[in-house]
Image 1 (cartoon, rainbow, N blue to C red):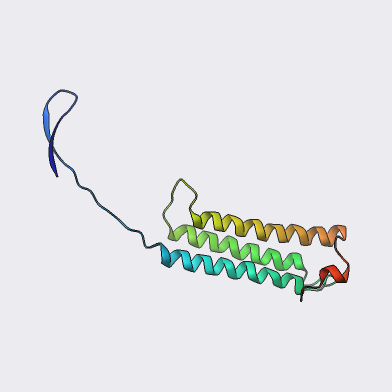
Image 2: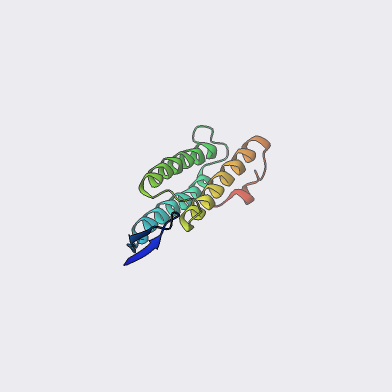
Length: 126
């Protein structure tokens, strides 16, 4: 589109306006990220399969391994996607995953330190 506009000195200038419409392919990244993070959250249930008395492979270690995997995954995803100034649905989902992983970590740490919910009836998930 070609227009004539005047600038601040009242001189006429020809201006070319170019409009580009871009569509981002969101499904590829979203499904890969959603699926992988869902697998991390679902595998977190495996921490309850570790016996409370087991000191070698404790639940806290299991949770910390998943948190470190989520951190590494976050860095990979951050390199693939463009930086934006707002929270996308993917960012909100990742924040919820972080909340869940750290919630389980702190629950298992409190369970180990303070002896909360140490009765076998409350602890049987597997």
